[in-house]
Every structure is written in C-alpha cells, then in structure tokens.
Length: 89
Picture 1 (spheres, rainbow, N blue to C red):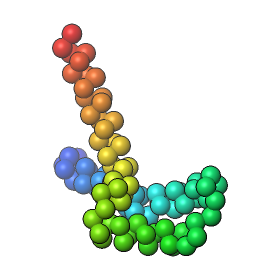
Picture 2: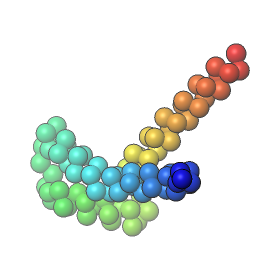
Picture 3: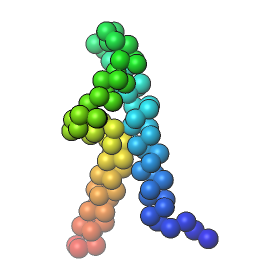
C-alpha cells in the first residue's frame, strides 16, 4: 500500500526544513569562512543569530530556512509549466 501523497509531501517538507535549520547554516558558515574570513562569534553565534532572526520574524531568515523546500517546489513548478506548454502546442 502506497503512503498518501500528503504524507510523503509532509515528510519531504519536514526533512528539508530540518536540513535548512541544521545543515544549511553550517554549510554557510564553512563557505563563508573560506570566502569572507572567520565569523567573530563562531558557528554557534551564527546559529544564535539565525534563531533570533527567526523569532523576530525576519523574512530573510525564514527564506533561508525554507529555501531547500522552496527550491524543490520551484523546480516542480518549472517542470509542470514545461509539460503544460508541450501539451498546449
């Protein structure tokens, strides 16, 4: 028996949200360290700054956290539009 589509989508969203909260800031820190130089407060300081921005309702912090899922949604939208365009012609 296949799991319902909403369950699969919820699990995907949850997994990508966890990635956006846990892994993405660490990757940003590591890349930033190589390109920009050391972050004064370290990796934990970056996590704290992102957490405080999320609590404050900062749009860019929320976009950062949701960006992995939003990327998947935008790819799906692009593929759907491409299919619609092909079937229309």
